[in-house]
Amino acid sequence: MNRETPELYDAIVIGGGGGGMFCAFTTANRGKRVLLLEHNERLGKKIEISGGGRCNFTNINASAENYLSRNRDFCKSALARYTPWDFIALVEKHGIAYHEKKLGQQFCNGSSRQIIGMLERECQESGVRILSHCDVQEVEKTNHYIIRTSRGTFQSDALVVATGGLSFPKLGASDLGYRIARKFGIGVTDIRPGLVPLTFQPHEKDFYAPLAGVALPVRISAGNRHFEEAMLFTHRGLSGPAALQISSYWDGNSPLAIDLLPDKKDSEAFFAATRSGTTALQNLSKIWPRRFAESWCDRNAPEKPLASCSKEEIERLDASLHEWKQSFAGTEGYPKAEVTCGGIDTGELSSKTMESRKVPGLYFIGEVVDVTGWLGGYNFQWAWASASACGTAI
Picture 1 (tube, rainbow, N blue to C red):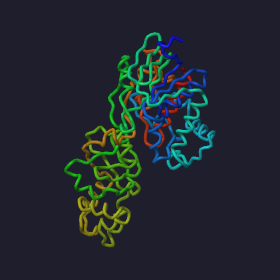
Picture 2 (spheres, rainbow, N blue to C red):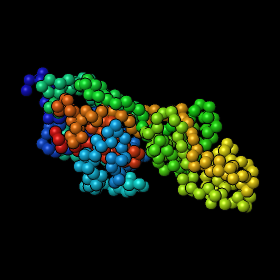
Picture 3 (cartoon, rainbow, N blue to C red):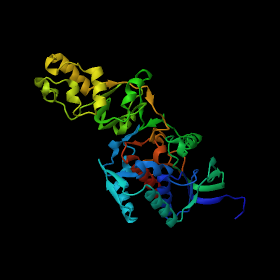
């Protein structure tokens, strides 16, 4: 081959995260020559920190209901054709011990490095060529896709964009995928941080700061969407599963409704102690951390014994317990966001193959697409499913 002619591959995958690796070996297993490009020094850096270092690699309950997208139906085809049980079978094939934590979430017993190692082995065994520390500088299309990088120029018949979103910029996140899409005239929806902690209004930070570290079960709602999980106070606002989940649905302005006693709907039964002369603080301290009970009652509850409260006062107390309205200044942004909401417009892609409808041979998979999962392994399952759909189609 002429030395000035770039090496030709059947497919080049940009992005060595979970979806990129999965797509690369799926494609190579079908007899294709595949090049995987990763700009970091090693593959799977986001996998490494996931699930507290144990990688919540899928969720057995994954369905379209667990995803946000302008087109809620788009993800159905890929999710149906590559299920959580398919990925679990791959994990078992590699002898990786795992367990279900809660709500269908599957975690490694050991380290998230086991999942990275599994994906790397699959790539090696299928003959994928991997180039790390490789920055993509320019992408063009002539008869082939031409990819100019810091490690040379390559060409391919198919190009897969698996670059992820903007979350965790310290791990090398960039807008490359969106730039490639726009270069080829492919639409990108509005993007924003998802699964991200919420921040209190400036005038409320000092009041809530002493509660940092306090966690309690709540039911948190935005519009008609709600989640019933743990909420955690931080020095800046609210985190924990409940806050992270609802952040993806929050409009950025409206107050959120928080039920602080989701398992105690009957206020009269809960406050039956009114007959014994106890206060709201005495009752709530039995089920909440003491410092939260004191802080909340200081703002919302009468100091007198509940037996002395009128029916109207008890009703107001009950309403504030079950529908605490709290406004927020914003979120902690991409540095603390687990995902990016929005992305490549699904109307531009085939739901069966992830291929662009207007640019043949150009594919987008994983987080870069406008499909965002809930917390709990759903985003990994979308990565595997969309990568499988793409890799089997090339």
